[in-house]
Length: 263
DNA sequence: TTTACTGTTAGGAC
DNA sequence: TGTCCTAACAGTAA
Image (cartoon, rainbow, N blue to C red; front, side, top):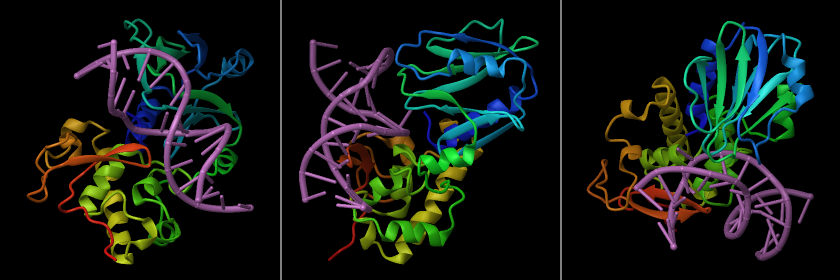
């Protein structure tokens, strides 16, 4: 379930279990329609070790000083796990990095929207994709500037990886819920106070989820994440949760306390 | 059997 | 030129 916090949890799992081990080989699962490193790219990595990780938004990188980076994007349903080679394999494993000593890194991807590729220069990659600043590292002024010149819905703006990298559907809804902003509100009509509130809540949401390693069960029951269904009681007022489509994505919100900008 | 889905992106509309 | 929106991608689960 990969938005920024889920990707950060994945990065931490890789950093904890897959660094400083010599790469012995790779295994491919059922890989039609999945973007993976070519055979010659895989050969380049054999005998080397990963020594560091990076993450920008939803993009995860594993690499070594002077060597190429393995870029991992989890797509809509991807996940990674460090396992013992002897452990029973999970379903939908598309790609496995096998390390010396019986450890391996599994990339699972049921819906095949994820991808793995070799990248020489992470900063150039980020520039090439035109990604915005990482959502957790963006400054107040930069956030206000980007939101202030967006004419579309605020929800769509939050989801645009070119404006800020890392927000996804769930945590965008959660941030707007806490901020009392209707997801359909035109971004450039929000007062600077409301933009500042939104930025504060957005960071709070992402950081709190990062702190639980994206274990949703550890998040407070009052969070929208536990009430994403039509007709649930709002946990912040007397309203009722409803849903609508904004920018082509389902948005859960409370019409009583989440309001737009009045004329 | 039908419908929805946590991400990205090409192509078209404005 | 730029910004925004929609549909499509593939597979599963409710």
